[in-house]
Length: 77
Image (cartoon, rainbow, N blue to C red):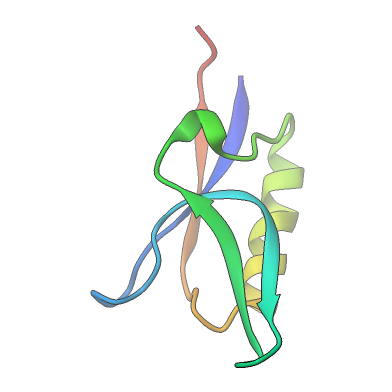
Protein backbone atom coordinates (compact mmCIF):
# COMPACT_ATOMS: atom_id res chain seq x y z
CA UNK A 1 0.00 0.00 0.00
CA UNK A 2 1.15 3.52 -0.75
CA UNK A 3 -0.02 6.94 -1.79
CA UNK A 4 0.25 8.79 -5.10
CA UNK A 5 -0.46 12.42 -5.90
CA UNK A 6 -2.91 12.91 -8.73
CA UNK A 7 -2.87 16.26 -10.54
CA UNK A 8 -6.41 17.38 -11.35
CA UNK A 9 -6.81 19.66 -14.40
CA UNK A 10 -8.99 22.73 -13.92
CA UNK A 11 -9.04 23.76 -17.58
CA UNK A 12 -8.71 21.86 -20.84
CA UNK A 13 -5.10 23.00 -21.37
CA UNK A 14 -3.89 22.13 -17.86
CA UNK A 15 -1.64 19.19 -17.14
CA UNK A 16 -3.08 16.06 -15.57
CA UNK A 17 -1.87 12.70 -14.37
CA UNK A 18 0.22 11.40 -11.49
CA UNK A 19 3.15 13.28 -9.99
CA UNK A 20 6.42 11.59 -11.00
CA UNK A 21 8.69 13.00 -8.32
CA UNK A 22 10.18 16.35 -9.25
CA UNK A 23 9.37 19.84 -10.45
CA UNK A 24 11.16 21.07 -13.56
CA UNK A 25 11.82 24.79 -13.89
CA UNK A 26 12.12 26.07 -17.42
CA UNK A 27 14.37 29.10 -17.04
CA UNK A 28 13.56 30.64 -20.42
CA UNK A 29 9.89 31.06 -19.52
CA UNK A 30 10.49 30.93 -15.73
CA UNK A 31 7.75 28.33 -15.43
CA UNK A 32 7.69 25.49 -12.88
CA UNK A 33 6.00 22.31 -14.09
CA UNK A 34 5.80 19.07 -12.10
CA UNK A 35 6.88 15.95 -13.97
CA UNK A 36 3.79 13.84 -14.49
CA UNK A 37 2.66 10.60 -16.08
CA UNK A 38 -0.60 8.87 -16.92
CA UNK A 39 0.91 5.51 -15.96
CA UNK A 40 0.56 4.84 -12.22
CA UNK A 41 3.55 2.45 -12.34
CA UNK A 42 5.80 5.43 -13.25
CA UNK A 43 4.39 7.72 -10.56
CA UNK A 44 6.16 8.59 -7.32
CA UNK A 45 4.63 6.38 -4.64
CA UNK A 46 4.88 7.55 -1.03
CA UNK A 47 4.96 4.99 1.75
CA UNK A 48 3.14 7.32 4.14
CA UNK A 49 0.27 9.72 3.55
CA UNK A 50 2.27 12.54 5.17
CA UNK A 51 4.88 12.31 2.40
CA UNK A 52 2.16 12.66 -0.23
CA UNK A 53 0.65 15.61 1.67
CA UNK A 54 4.05 17.32 1.70
CA UNK A 55 4.36 16.73 -2.06
CA UNK A 56 0.94 18.30 -2.66
CA UNK A 57 1.97 21.38 -0.66
CA UNK A 58 5.20 21.66 -2.66
CA UNK A 59 3.42 21.27 -6.01
CA UNK A 60 0.75 23.86 -5.20
CA UNK A 61 3.34 26.29 -3.82
CA UNK A 62 5.92 26.01 -6.62
CA UNK A 63 3.95 25.26 -9.76
CA UNK A 64 1.99 27.89 -11.61
CA UNK A 65 0.13 25.36 -13.74
CA UNK A 66 -1.38 23.23 -10.98
CA UNK A 67 -4.20 24.46 -8.76
CA UNK A 68 -5.67 21.16 -7.56
CA UNK A 69 -4.26 17.79 -6.48
CA UNK A 70 -5.64 14.83 -4.62
CA UNK A 71 -3.99 11.95 -2.82
CA UNK A 72 -4.91 8.53 -4.10
CA UNK A 73 -4.35 5.38 -2.07
CA UNK A 74 -2.63 2.67 -4.11
CA UNK A 75 -3.28 -0.97 -3.25
CA UNK A 76 -0.35 -3.29 -3.93
CA UNK A 77 -1.16 -6.56 -5.62
